Structure formats: C-alpha cells, structure tokens
Image (spheres, rainbow, N blue to C red):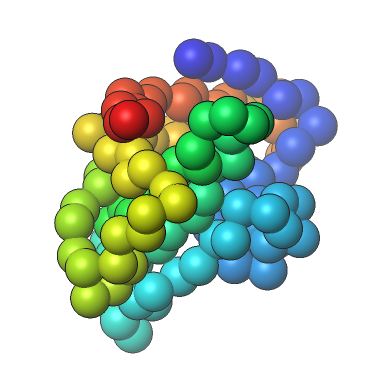
Length: 137
C-alpha cells in the first residue's frame, strides 16, 4: 500500500506511529504498551510492544506481541532520507501471558516505510505499508 501526504512532516508521522503517548491518545482501547524500550545508543531502536485489536461480538479480541525496529533508509551517497519501522511477532509468556478471553494474532511481517518528499522543505511524505498478519482463531 502506498500513499502520498503533501502536508505531513515525516517526523510527525513517525511520532504518531511509535510514541507511546501518541498511540494511547489516538486509540485508548488498544491497550498499547511498550514492554521493553530501546537501549541507549541502539542504532536499530529495538523494542518490544503489544496492543489489542478489538473485534465486535461474538468474535474475540486479538492481541499482538511484536518486536519493533526503527531503521534509517539511505539514498545514494549514504545520506539518511527516511525511516523504516519494521515489526515481527514473537512469543514470550513472561512478557505477555496468553489470556483465555483473547486470541493471539501473529504478525509475520509488518513495516512502514516513511520518506520525505522534496516538494516543500520539511513537508510532504511518502508512506508505504506492508503487512502479513495472521489473526488466529
């Protein structure tokens, strides 16, 4: 999936996708949590996160536990020109125990590719979304 936003700044979109407070403000019912924050100086910004995908009755809500990385996208010449936010599910009972009232969904691959455009300085965003999600159940 590809979309162009002529009036969005890349930094604002990135913050909306990865910042805990932003995510909780936008979707308070998702129970978005950061279980393990990135270590200081980690160039990949590796984190463990979880959230809930709400389903209407009579279906069970889905719960997702993911490892997330934030990686710079480089253009010719090695200059950073964007960011890839990449996620993949993993299982860890200690981090997020299974619950009987929810189904554990599994993200085989999930990514957001954010690139600023050159239409206006600092404004304009190309966003590519790739996702393969097994909802389970």
